[in-house]
Length: 307
View 1 (cartoon, rainbow, N blue to C red):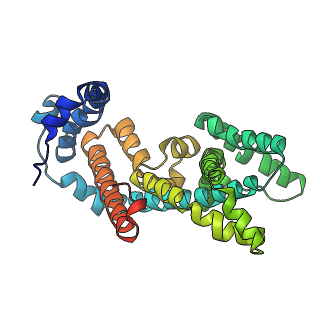
View 2 (view 1 turned 90 degrees about the horizontal axis):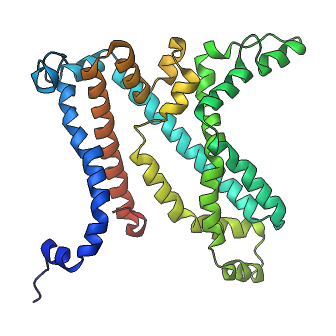
View 3 (view 1 turned 135 degrees about the horizontal axis):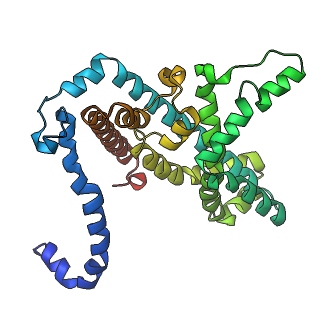
C-alpha cells in the first residue's frame, strides 16, 4: 500500500512552479481575501469615530431592515430575473448566429460580418447610454421624432418602467452577442468534418445536420458558459443598469438591482452597514447557487461540471 504524498512533497518537487504561482496567489490574497474583513460592517451601525471594530454591533438588524422593507425581495427578484434573461437570450442568439455563420462559405463576407458583430463589445457603457438617450429622448429622440413625423403620439420611454424590461435585455444582447458568438463559432470550427460527411451520405439535410450534430456538440461549451454566468448572477450588470437608468427613481421598482442599490446607499446616504449587508447577501446567494447547479450537473454528467 503506497502512502499518499502530501503538500510539502509537492512543494519541494515543484518549487519553480509554485514560485511562478506565488504572485497570483498574493494578488488574490491582498485584493480578494484581506478585504473580506469588511464583512463585519454588515453587522454594525458604522460610526466614523469608532471605525470598523469600534462601531456599535447591531447583529442582523441591517438584514431585517432590508427584508421587512421589501427592498431585499425586489432587488433579488430583479437581479436574478434580469440575469436569467441575459443568459438565455444571449446564448440562444449566439448559438443561432454562430450556426448561421458556420454555414456561410464566403470567407470575406464571414469576416466582415464577424467584425461588425464584434464591434459593439468594445463600445463603452457611457456611449451606450448616449445611444439610448438619442433614441428614446421624449423631445428629440429618434423614436419620437419618427412617430411625430407619422402623426403619432410620442412615447415617454424614460417614464415607462415596463419598456426597460425589454430594452435592457436587448441592449445587453446587442453588446455581447459578437463576443459570445465567437466562442461558439470556435467550437463549431473544431467539430470534425467526418460527422457531417457521414450524415450527408445517410441523406441528412442541413437542418438535420445542425440539430443532430452541431447542437449536441455545443452542449459542453454552453454548460461551461452557463456555470460561469451563474457564478456571477447576483452581481448583475452594474455598468449597464447605472448608465441606462441612472437616478431615475420612477424605474427603480422594475430595474433596480443589488449592485445599483449598494452603490446608491454609499453615494447618497453613506450607509456602509446596509450596503455591506446587501453585498454579503449577494455573495452568499451566488455561492449557494453555483454550488447547487454544479452539483446537479455533476450528478447528470460529471464531465460537464467545473469541479
